Image 1 (cartoon, rainbow, N blue to C red):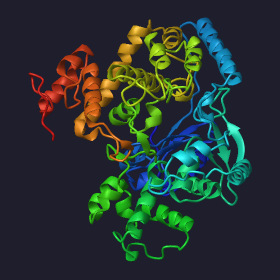
Image 2 (image 1 turned 180 degrees about the vertical axis):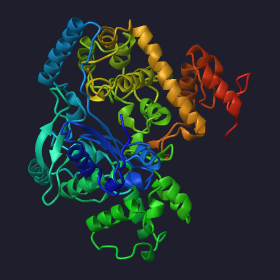
Image 3 (image 1 turned 120 degrees about the vertical axis):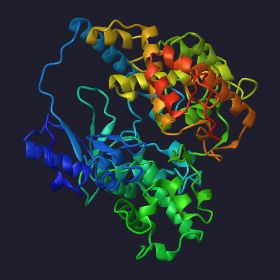
Image 4 (image 1 turned 60 degrees about the horizontal axis):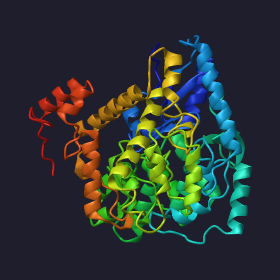
Length: 531
């Protein structure tokens, strides 16, 4: 291992840097995780870009930039040794066969991106009716019902087919979740998932614009959820007189031009861009004059998916509120997002639902109805909701710990990797004797440790709330009961802090000692008051 001077790479884009480093090292197969100008200038929502992947949420690129690290480069050259190669390959073959089965048998009755496996198949699926008519446009304000016409479908399909040079997958994976995108007049970059639409919808524009500005934003290294909302937020403040025209010198007249203009201003921290670089929550506090009312789509001070709904969903309330990853797609997953309309279809779905950690989850789903006594917000019940969220969350944390793709485990319905075969993979691959109980405990320890990092940074119960306007119909008493019950299930106190007993049971005694030393907990396990 060596540390190299990266002065000559300063100011260069994350994609460009990867190519330059491979040339410099004469290692065309080297893997490069790099930041662009966004990370260098410590934009609060800067990302780390690596191939077709992106570590985007929480401003990790800014952390890397603050440490003066431009890129991390790895080239593996040694053998991979297995404890039981024959058994491991046998398990892989079983998974491969199941993937083929699932691809040949998509789940009926759900939106196209959830019917199959892999990351949401945004690069392959052209039907965007659900997203464009249910997610919000602009500064997460407006729903455009009836937007997805046959004409739009044709235009957007043509745009994507022309820009998408090929579908790509991770090494040796049969899924092709990503794509290389080459918009006319722009360099090639790799894309997957919802960034395909975030810039388009924030700017009330079309797919061609979205693919072009996403290229530039990826090169700069910015999160595709936050950046478009920050720009839409700024223009909304201008329209409502909270920001003045003088804050935007030489602002273009057209909406698309304004987004490109703001993108450059933010990344370079020029003028008002220096304030917007900190995200809508902190920018609104600095701007004042009522700007806080326009920073309306945050959880834990981070911009969320541009989505506003009608009736409170207890499962999503808990996931949004308590998720440490600030990203709903890294919490939701194996339990369906809504009940199937007919009970016979729900029963059919559960017949080969081998992924459940306990048979009770099948009954939870069978009894779930669109209307009536067993419908949201009071069904699933509080206890059921806690169980469901705990399962889905657990699988995401296991994936992260194992370096596994959520697209084949924690995110899709009926995935090939699950709580029952993961222990077998760990035992055969690493030689660590593992079973479901041990893996569940390990995931709980890992999840609790992540929680403790955020608690040490000041996060408390008051931060665990979806945007006030996320649902039109809210139920404060139910929401309180959901949080109370979930905290109790996790072994946390009323402020969401893991108790001393919980920490000690998970062999996190050193965290207990630090929390006591910092006054976060006391020896008799009383939480610091933070209200």
